[in-house]
Length: 484
Ligand code: FAD
Image (cartoon, rainbow, N blue to C red; front, side):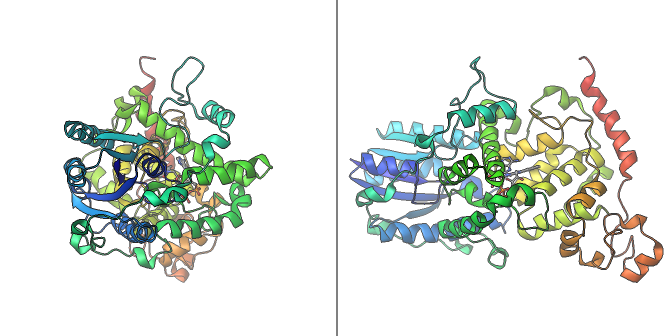
């Protein structure tokens, strides 16, 4: 039989579950990637992720060609294109890795229907997670909503079977080159209707080779991850998020490296593995509760939190704009927003700080921040992003309690004590002392003058007073308790 391997967010050859299954099942496997118009049309015209995907596809195409196959790359509506290609290529089956985001499930249902009409089978495989959907349930057969018991169950179940790599290369002889009429280089960015970004100037290597380089670097530091990961000025985390997002690295490979190290007593590896488990946790939350992140109208995991009256109107819009542009007057928040705006990455500690600031200092609806991150993060992952925002706004499963409100100045003093991160992104504050840089409005006027800082001019005055904002938030959240 002949098969079609449809790459989506799994842009690698090695340890690719669906590709392995296709190669095992078929004598000839043709590969395709579709730049889906349904997704691309909603994106801003300069988008680092489109560029990341394009660069990664160039590598994937070359790798498949070197193995005797190839990669057809189309720019079309995936829900129509796949069935059409299946007919043109006269395949009996299409293979793809599962994606449980609501929009992807909709798309796949349409593809399944169209393929069924053409008499073509559609096989999907688990590839993105170690455990997905119903694979881990409580003893009562319910999905987990609390992380700690989920993690315990995850660790109890995981073994070599779940972490083993699929030996794709041993079956590569089934890879078939596309027919000449469908052979073409990956379209250019301009051909896709996009403008170049600053991706190539950033330290974000693309493709499986880029992922391997980042992983090699991180493995030197993994034992210190637990200590280093909270300090945004330090190279503590792996920076693999974008590679997990687009599948240029395999989750089995990562968990398969971290798990034995953690069993051997590496606290760093254990903490990092825990983060990978959070990723699985949020995937299964989204799979079981898709209403938390349905297109454009995310709902609180805890419905009572949708009673909250968020600050809205013109004034709120101005505050939101200031948050987006990194002009809140709180240096750590503003430096963090400069990081996401300039690079598409934001350190995890800072994601928590700016998310808390948006909903608990500015009183703005967390969904506004969720959307902003969705648009700007290179590693944007619907399930984790929604989970992170609902954690910060306290509306999520296993979230921060609503009365726990991050103090943006204390966070800054603890996690960027020398203001190194702030100085990197807010050069206008670089000359302030370590004591003054976290809250310039409280600095002595002479120090501000000496450092060349003019509040309200080259750096904003704080939008809100944290202590007052905190009181307003406690009142705003009080509705959550009504009717309990
Ligand atoms: P590392 O620290 O090296 O962690 C390794 C991997 O573990 C990450 O790449 C990620 O896949 C996973 N991971 C780590 N922390 C978490 C977590 N808390 N929840 C789920 N998975 C985790 N992560 C995303 O991948 N995409 C998002 O869109 C996203 N949005 C977030 C929004 C908010 C408000 C918050 C608080 C967190 C968000 N996170 C998101 C989680 C976390 O911040 C990022 O995964 C991490 O900063 C990515 O950097 P890294 O790859 O260097 O991470």
